[in-house]
Length: 203
Image (tube, rainbow, N blue to C red; front, side, top):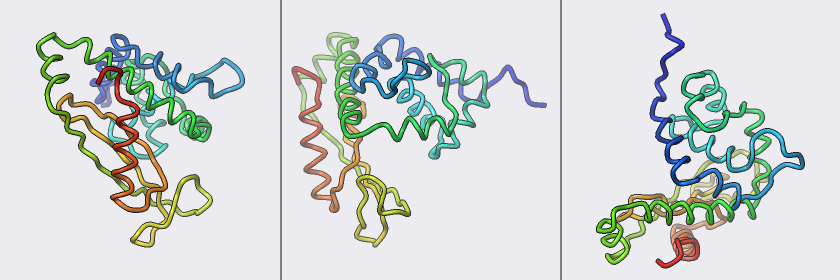
């Protein structure tokens, strides 16, 4: 019989600890700004952290929010409640370009805090050595040209393209964004330029 005191998502305790030590939610709230008229329910930073937690649990659709909510033990490990799928859809729709750029700035701040927490020798190795930015892109197919920032891909699909830059030496995801870039070359140029703009101060 299922045991309600157990969870398969015990790794979420690491998410909560990182949030506590690096101030992830606070940085996200500062970068994103208010996403609602009234100060009630989840903030923008709390929603973004919940979204990351859902994805870390292997989910790739809004229904993943409901699945994690059903895991009361796993959800209880997080610093804030996980919203229902319908609420998540509403909050996600409020993330415009300004909020996405705020996410990038917050990511830069958190990366700088993580680097500062490293032992001196390890931090020096990363900061004085070569920097390798691994770029990747993935098309996410949708079924309406009315969706924001979607184009027809080279395959003929209507899709939004997610660009990600990973700082190899530090082992952190440096940037993840979406744009109208229609070719890999355009995406590489746009992502590398944004990664340089949003890098932690002093790098």
